[in-house]
Length: 311
Image (cartoon, rainbow, N blue to C red):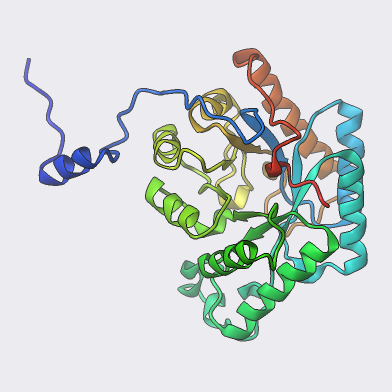
């Protein structure tokens, strides 16, 4: 039989000597890692952008008897008043559930980000392109944490680095979690490492990463929790990974299963009762698959700071 050869040479050899991944042909390996305080996974529901939606989601989850670790708001903190944020934090605190708030301003709202709103500018993601907006992000982080927020979603690597420095100096709470958005496009283990080195406590992976990439990201970033989308909006591909949830959890733990986005076409769609119920159904279906194929999994301990329960 003719020997099969891959397209590999000196580059392959260099990567191999460094212990870096050399391709996608990997046998699955369980990470064996857990969150601080214990537990392999949590469940995160995205696109909870108002107190009304949070209250409705919490009621429907209770009705279905489903455990959820935390929620995240995705439209940006600058759209929410102090009063509404206080109400959202109080509800989560009473339920012992966490919530992360997306930092703003972002380019889609910024008068100085005209290039972002062009076809080519979208490729830069939601990175900040002016110092006024950068300062405003810092101010928003201070406002959020003063109100009790303990989880912030960041869209810009530079902002992540500065907020991490502020936290180290005591200007921000020591138990604050900085999580990078999927829009940061951590598409491979080396980008994940860069975010970690600049202060990210967890990263939301790009939406369509296959098991080998998640596995090698975990290997090269052993202490960095991953937040992995299990289903996505139709405008972002519309795929469902329920059937892979058990494998994803094993190779990527500790991790958050991000579930529910596929209930709507676009993150800026209006949300009514039917959409909220559909989100809950997606959570239920994922957990049902895990009950079947990975019944001995362990949930994140309430002792972990990654719950992001408001102060």
